[in-house]
Image (cartoon, rainbow over all chains, first blue to last red; front, side, top):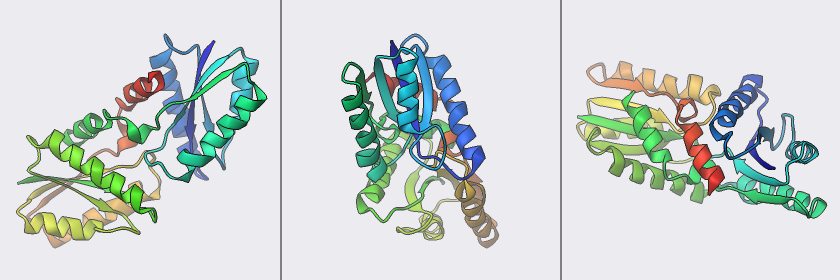
Length: 120
Length: 120
């Protein structure tokens, strides 16, 4: 079963974390044909954590999980911290396929999104 | 003359700031029919600053400037700091139209971008 995990940084502002949950809910509707489960997790500060969310997806039957970083920039979090969590879980669950999608800032079609916003 | 100013946070990592310059260059090509000038600025840490970039756009002939925040979340920077810079410049240049576009995280079509990334 395929699952998608949207990973954000996590904030001390509750409303920022709720924004991520809302994005994940919209994403779940959008990707339902490709991913049976779509959830979100936070790198730090907020819950659920990345390891907890991966554990739960696997407990719920996922065996092919794509982790997608909701980050604009490839700082240490995107380059090291999230991949380290994914690598740990690969060792823990060798029977599960765990993939890292390109992070949001790498999407070429972001430029079109910015163009639309600029014209609103 | 219409101008677009892409505003990012600014980072101590030079490569992150260069990423923003690259995004602004791509955006300039995309929006050329709508905006005669497209540039970028940083809220803090890196240069050019928002006030300097607005001054330069006006010196170069812009009289209708759209400021677009390259931020995913509406934290204090998006809600208060960037609007404060824009308001200061409105007072300084009453003859120039200065608008704030919705910030990137508000774009409904971000969901489609995430979907594409998840399937790569």
